[in-house]
Amino acid sequence: SARDSQIFIIGCGISGIGAAQKLLKHGFHNVHIIEATARSGGRIRTGRLGDNFVEIGANWIHGPSKENPVFRLACDYQLLDKESMSEENQAIDVGGHPLFVPNWFTSSGRKLGLEMMGPVAEVERLAPEEWKEDQANTEIKMAMINTLLKLECCVSGTHTMDDVGLGAFGMYKTLPGLDCTFPGGYEGLIDHMMKELPKDIVLYNKPVKCIHWNYTKNGPSGTSFPVTIECVNGETFAADHVIVTVPLGYLKKHQSTFLSPPLPLHKLHSIQKMGFGTNNKIFLEFEQPFWDEDCELIYLVWEDETHLADVVSDVKMSWIRKLIGFTVLKPTERYGHVLCGWIAGRESEYMETLSEHEVLHSVTQLLRIFTGNPTITPRKLLRSQWFHEPYSCGSYSYAAKGCSGYDIDNLAEPLPLKGSNSKSLQVLFSGEATHRSFFSTVHGALLSGWREAERLISHYTPASGSFSSKL
Ligand code: 6YU
Image (cartoon, rainbow, N blue to C red; front, side):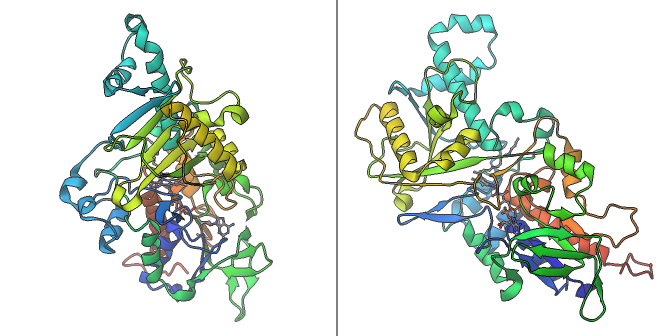
């Protein structure tokens, strides 16, 4: 029967897990996940810094409210605290920009007063001649704007905002609800989802090398399969359908070898055009805080950066200038005094090549300068290295200049294309980057996995009144 078809899902991130869950629920029983690494979760990864859980990958549920499937799952599994689940929290709508209580430190060791903050937002609206009237503060405001611009690079996961396209940027949708975190770690969500799947569904440590499609291999009982999956270790798997969930960064890097025959040109072009960048975290633990008790976000401002720029001129010498500052891990009773630094772009990719010791040294020097306190010494450091993760090749996708919704639709389009005579839906595509309005998020990834599972389900569900089977 249709439900016997062999389905392989490549990648055990939330998109792949979501697809498997949905297929199994609809009676498909020959479903397997092939995962390159030894673990599930992909870019959802909870690590440890001393006694603390810290998120190496995804951090928040963006827009935790009823419409968000990650929020719904997290509530079902009881993984959130009361406040995050409250109706009030769900109703707060800040358009994707949580309002953190900030502290501003500058490169001359000054701590800026909050009164500076208002005028920064105003500067963007002022006519150039009006700027001059406030000459004394113009330069420091420009420097503050540069910090905010670098922060936008982190949010979008891009090297520079010059690479982000305005049109497609507008396709990204925010949901109501004030962003919240998982007190027990984001990976708890993965653990719960995995518990609902059969134990042996995932084949770990099996990086896929190539998907051979439009290809017929005779199976044991004379059945024929259009797809053969070839793993790096030489093993092969015959399939009717394959759902590819690998990150866009991985597809970009391996675009010419990952499929055979190769991807159709329009699909290839869209893969090249869509953006995929790096955003990394640097966690630091301190004995004592140097920030205010209510502070949630520490900004670092370079006073000599008085011209609009979000990239540094000499990456090797000055990569640390791209570090926008730190979010403060709350509540303090749970974490102690832990900061999470944010750094995007090629400066971030360069940081990954340095030893932990070198990064610690640079960050310590930086903090001593910005606080004017020559004794500040972080106790521990942990940083992510998403660009050099061989099965991620970066952090998440963004709508690059020149991209449109069609490019995202092209990424999501299954193979072979409509109108071809061969067996349809051989290779399907899901993953964060294939979602038109929620790209770059966990909920976008989950929804895209469900979408491709549903595509297969409806493929095998004869339209009512029709006698023809699609098999
Ligand atoms: C969110 C957040 N968040 C921070 C950082 C990162 C990400 N995201 P997966 O990669 O998970 O799975 C694929 C699997 O495939 C994987 O296991 C591989 O090992 C495997 N694989 C690869 N190659 C293979 C092969 N050859 N063979 C076999 N297997 C193979 N999202 O909702 N909240 O706070 C953050 C953040 C540092 C790195 C994030 C966040 C993104 C999510 O982590 C990500 O989308 C999903 O986990 C992806 O799941 P998946 O299954 O698709 O892939 C206007 C405007 C616009 C801009 N954007 C707004 C900003 C929102 C983004 N914010 C992110 C921020 C943070 C901090």
